[in-house]
Image (tube, rainbow, N blue to C red; front, side, top):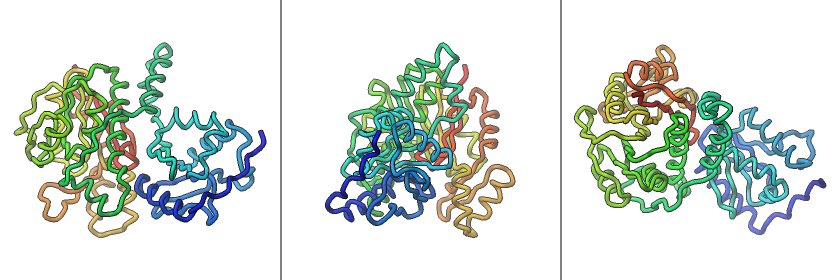
Length: 392
C-alpha cells in the first residue's frame, strides 16, 4: 500500500488548533500521556499538564504505516509504553478511511470519549484488567458471547440522555466558569456506566429493576443510568435536597433525602445496582464501615455495588504538588494504606487516600460483600473504581 500524502492544512489552521487544544484539555485528565496522530504546521499539539507525543513516534519509521496491521502494532506499542489517550485531529481523520482495520480496532477495543469531526476524535486507551478479563470470559464456552456483549457495551452509549442541567449544579458551573467544553460534564455518566456494566457482567447479572445513586448530586451520572436502564426505577439520594428534588422532577428519579449518619437514611431496597461516586473519597476511615453496612443491607442477592476511591494516581498527583497541607494525608497512606485530610470548614468532609489492600480489607470485614474488581483510574482516568457483589 502506497503511503498517503499528508493533506493540505485546512483554512484557519490556527483556530482549529486552538479549538482542538481546548477540547483536549477539557476531556483528558491532567498528567495523562496523549498520542496525537499527524503533526501540524507548528509542530505537535501542546496541552497544558499533559504529556504529548507524535504518533507514530519512532523517528526510524516511515511517515505513515504501510497498512492497518502496522498502524495497530504501533498503537499497541505506544499503549504498552504508557500512552493513555490517542487524539486524531480533523486533519488526520483520513487515517480511519485509509486504515479501516485500525479504525475497527479503535472502535472495538477502546472507548471514544470525544467525537466531533469538526475538531477531533479522542479515544481512551484504558483496557480491561487481567482480573476483569478472567471474570468476564466465563471459561471457553462463554468467552465468545461475553466478549461480544463487552464489545457492544463499550462501543454503544445510551440515547436520549436528558441534557437539562440545574443552575445550582456546582459540578457544571465550576467547569463552565473555567471555560471548559460543555461536553465535559456529560462524559462522567458514560464513564461510570461502563464500570457498572463491567460489574454486571462479572456478576453474571442481567436483570436490573432498581438502581440507587448515592450521592446523586444534580444527576451528573444518574441521567445516564436513567437512559441506559429505561425500565428500571432509579432512586436519587443526597444531602443536598435541591439536588434530590431536581433529579425527581427532571430525571424521573425516586427522591430520598440523605443524612450524615447512614443508619438514619430510609432506603426502600433491595437494589440491583448501587453507584456511589465521590463519597468515600471524602470520608475518614471510621465512617467507611457504616456506609458499607448500609449498602449491604439494601442490596439484593447477586446485586452489585460500584464505588470510587482516591488511589495511587491521586497520591502521586498530590506528591508532585509538594504542599505541606498534604503531608499528613500522604504519611497515613504510605504507612497504613489509608490517609485523610480534613478540609477547613467542612466538618467531617475532607479528602481520603486508600490503597487496594486497605479497601480489600474493608470489604472483607463487611459480611455479605465480595470484591469483584478494582480498576485504577477507572472513572475517567482520575478516581479508582471498586466493584463488589452482594452474596446471598
